Image (cartoon, rainbow, N blue to C red; front, side):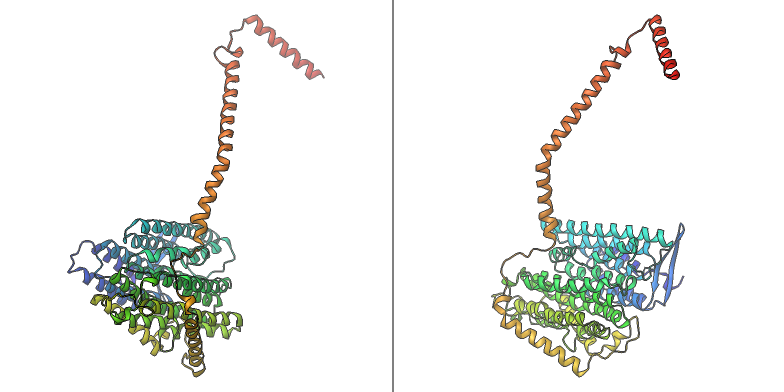
Length: 561
């Protein structure tokens, strides 16, 4: 058995088994050490398939390694290490255990070479992420976790149906590029898009992630939507419908993030927005676009986790999450503010940050294919991202009014995790060649050209000017934003109650009439065939002979005629 035969996901599963039983002194070694072991295993995987199992007539490929799968497995391993570092002082052992199962399953999905093992990891990931949410405790958290689970079970059922139909049609379980032109592949695409948080079934993300703990949200931000991006990259590159889905996701996320008052809901909607960029690139389907989607997924995991770490640090130290309750925290939490600003600049594609060197590849891919409308939408969306995540989040949380709160920066482990990811945001932005070398296709692209840098700086400058000119409109109040989930959380139950109240009496009358009719039929049968019925009487032999003669005569007459 070689190292390539050992699925790296099992290392994190082992960690999940150990965490509840090791003491507080050993637990940090497990939480920090096993993700590094996983990273080392992933880094050394050679190209090709290994860990192959034969079950019935199907071949399961538990490890299929190439540049694309390694890229995602590497960033998931790094994320697990940084998330574990940020969560070292988390007292809820259940959350850490579930997070390791969650991360291990995400790595399992990225390395799966067949649809069956992919589906198994996919469903384990859904259950583990639900447990991460539930670990926060509370009635509200329980309700949102159940809604989250129901949506993902629906997505899993759709995916499973699609896989079964596809396997019956093709006779193969191999996970390769597909066209969404059959029932099976269309259902598989729909199952993937649900996990990508594509509207209308996207509210599970903004509804659930902000209700997790200050550490749980960091883990949740990294795996589910990015595994969906990976399987779309692997399964549906160049599917044109994804361009329209992605552009809609981009502006959907921007609009709702601008309306939000909860700092973590702002960042949750921002996840939908950023995944929209990746989905659009997958729909474009060129090597430049697919490289851009993969690179942007890599950088997004880092800067989004950094933003949620800074928000989680504020929540941990103040207990507050509404923008209207915060402000002026840069005075007592300078490190958290600086790291949050680095994350905000990265998500806004500011030069010398990681977002700049990845998102620009997507825009360039649209320009190369003469998709002018898509290019304009991406440019407008970049300005929108700067408005809601690049400026709104740090401004209302760390600056604006003085809330009077003076909490210190969080404990050392949380600070170190934020510094690590802030350093990666800047390091990848300054030296993009290291990320480009890991992408699935050769990269012939230079992000730091004078026109590109100047254009992006102009775009961000005018977006920032717009924000401050419209600052009175940007200030949030204690309002509730209605999302698509309002339809199935409020409208659908109300419709069902109205339907039952209207048709309930009719149904009752119908059932009573049916029962009475059945009773009448049974009574009639009883009167003729019951113990005292006419058909149950004792007949004399002579009478019976007479009836036989009558019937015989009737038959002969009928036959003659």
